[in-house]
Length: 397
Image (cartoon, rainbow, N blue to C red):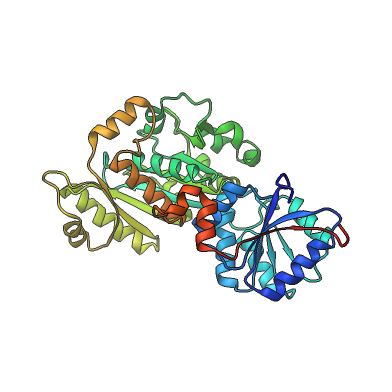
């Protein structure tokens, strides 16, 4: 087998459909290296395969629509530029629409023409096709609860997992992200609000690149009227078209334009600390947000301090389950701010922040196993013994 041929991943539990698809590949003039999975993988396994093999495309059978569409949607959020091709044994208009809405760049049905398959793999995802990028808003119950630090680490961990992520600072009174990361941006949120007409083409220039993460800081001393803030929905829509994930950092005191951020957010993380005022305000905000139909997860920061309440006590006080807890580690946060970076993942707090981000994306932390020493390919071999690698070719080659 020619190891230099960029592989194509084929995920298909339907044996009959897989045979027909492989026959379509074999009718082509040029060989293709196929990595075949006969089961739908977990998201972490699919991400590992994409990262390790760098496929030119992923073909996903819609034999079982629910897991297939879910996998397409989640992979599209992490890899918006990777061609995800939906495959099915019948040309179903309903399934075609569902696949495109989930993020599939193309739909291929029988008869599987090799030219059509290759054209589908070469085509970039259509602009505006599929769902918009997912958005998480992070807000504190009270100032100083650690929401900005949480938002920064959340967005950074998402980008480190391979997703195209944007961190937007809507905390105009504070604007801590610029300080935390030690950079002076050329552009800010103000520039995005003033250039909504051509914003889709400007993100690469407007957003400051910090490692793998794109950051749009808050402007300093900027005043704008209602007509400017009315463009917030357009800015958010553009950001979600251009990025797989958008993380919005919100202040404790919300203004009318923040309502659009909360309304568009797929999830809201409310960060509080185990202290009386913070708990009281967290409960009040939870009630207000829930009344407006907004999905909220509670994050308790600085837990396990010397005089703090326990997780169970916090849940009893707010009347809501705690989704995530972060340990109290002022020294680690202070050092990260001094260094202009993130809390070291050697610290327990750093591992907790990374785990929270991966949970939100839907990637489960893998357990240490002998197969892990061989990388993701070893994990896939252990979990998917039916992973096949073959080279398609036209008859007679």
